[in-house]
Image 1 (cartoon, rainbow, N blue to C red):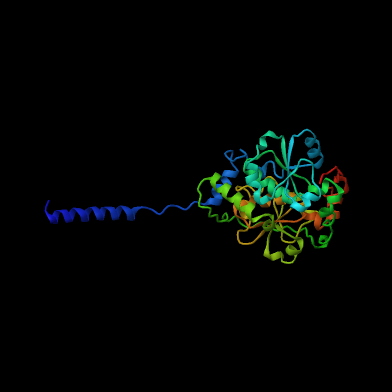
Image 2: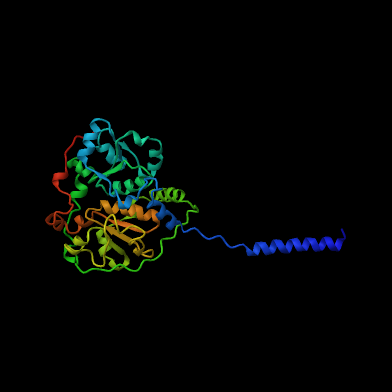
Length: 330
């Protein structure tokens, strides 16, 4: 072949290659949060159902833990600090830090137990932990309601010292309308499938800890405009006894679906979730943080702000009747 013809052939191949390359479209980025929420709401999720709209908050009473513990049917994981665990804990309980939780449950066959009880001080951190384990597929995990406060009076200080009426005069009955639905938060795990994104996000939320997922009433009332506030209980109770000024009402087991009101939550402000006791809100906060929202559970819920209204309205509230005074070991 003549040199000129060879040169022409090489140039032709290069031109075709460059043309083909220039015609390729840039890959469409994966909307990880959307992929994840669609996965969690589907029958393909590890639980084969949408936890937020079905079993949340998945709690178990101390009396049931006590009964199941007599026959070895419950696996008890106490997530309190090691010092407090040593000072007194439920017989047969194991002490596990939330930072080590995923590694721990991977090494235990939880399916051999009828139920797994997560135990903390007040029930709130346990509910946060329970949600993270539930959405990973551990469907027999429950938070012990009221925490160790309900096991024995020696541990009841967390609740007894935080039930107040400190903000009841500031509650309002006027409705705050939700804004228009917007985008999901931005997640950048680098994965594409729902399961891969879920695993990465649950690990990340466990690593940041419950400290990043909680907020006090003092912080909230000191800067109401700084938060997107979600009242997570019925519309009836939202109106009476009322709610935090500016709070929007979201109905449990309905509103947090992506096809309902989930996307009305802010992606630019911290989202404060509050309920009656801080336990359901801790569950929901864990879920929302997995999705990428900067969600925070308001500690002790309305029990910590308008306790007498909870009692008068027969709404969930901590009381001496929940302190079982069961034996404990050291």
